[in-house]
Image (cartoon, rainbow over all chains, first blue to last red; front, top):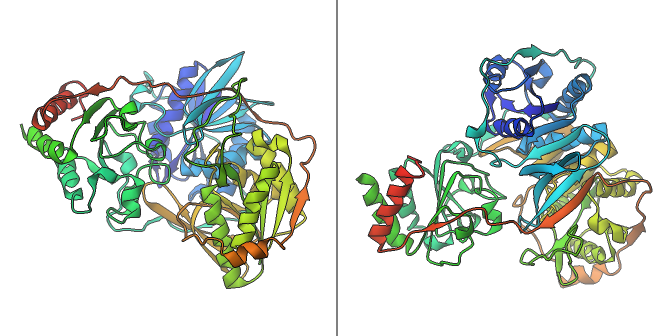
Length: 319
Length: 253
């Protein structure tokens, strides 16, 4: 059995949690999902629409706001009760905080940032990037089960989720959280900028890179984004220069996105950028340099002048 | 305050890796090495905390002999002393082995705060810091963008996804992993480089009996998985065709 750890905040399911569920479904093994928190009935019901054996909830006041200590304590109890052979999660920032700690607490192996699994002997090998994704490694986990795997966001298309014919049963599991000294005291999450944008939820994104040349030219990209009902984002050099705020940065040091459409304007395709957007369903690259690496991963490409093509696209979109 | 910073030495970013004959690791004989970028930010943050609160900064690294160069760099930037867990086998070690090696070296130091980068530029596990915290029995927080120390407690700003942040408080001693860009890096001065030559690098051995938990069975270059449809013609024609394909074929609108 594979146990998938789903993630929620304030009763809202993290969309990335569907991906490890898909990964688990694709192995053919029975799948259970666990979600922690307080007042998470609606989240559990949403998860129960997937074709899984059951959804397990652990509700407690100590789990209302995420802390690594409470999260690990609760999951140790769930794993002891359920005895999964594999535990999957999405490689979110939260998973980076607790998943390795959980594996270490149980002294079990973990592979992070996996993008796929493949048969290896009687078990599985997990493919993950190495050296900024210049290479990939197939990793086999050693030692007793359960083995832990966190999947890179964007590794699976959410429309690959198998839905159940009827909702899966939801079961509340009681975990004794009393007597646990939670060392981290979290304050309420906040956004730095007033107009902060969550690019991970965007359906369409227009992104600009060095090829845009001047801060004034970003208007062209902004107009194209508006015409496409898309969010505007950028590669790191644009945000480092202060032409767009950091919150709009896509890439290894910014956000990881998986929209339906990602249109890269004047982006060369350095790996630090590509790891943040390669999960997009459709990638369009417009770049002067026909040899730019961005074309390696693009579905559609135009090798040309973005200052001519972007306005022409705005015109074409009106038709 | 006694602060330890864990440094990793990684191949330079522009290095083009080659795979060894057994396809289990890279051939890095031709690589030049540099300080892992997030670790450089962790070191800078440690130096700033020392300037503010006093104390000592110890840089610590687990790796082969060449790693001493990264430790010298740390000393030149202002760290007080260094610990080098030295073993050639650490080149191909996984995060569990590295964390055990660092934990063994740091346990007796009884530091107040351990800093690491959030992940390495080569393997990118994002595991060593968290594992080390668990092995040392310390509370931890990851992907930190601001650090405050007051009255024996630590208050740190965690980066969440999508532009969200969160302050988290915890008691010292603790471990935090630092995000790139948290501060402005300083570079070693000539004076710093000269002073570093007199500073101590303590050698330590790898603890026995720690086995790998991850085995690489195949290391390879990614295959191009996509057929790119290049659209030619005048800007107006190409733009029109692209919009048509996005509407009718890709159906993204």
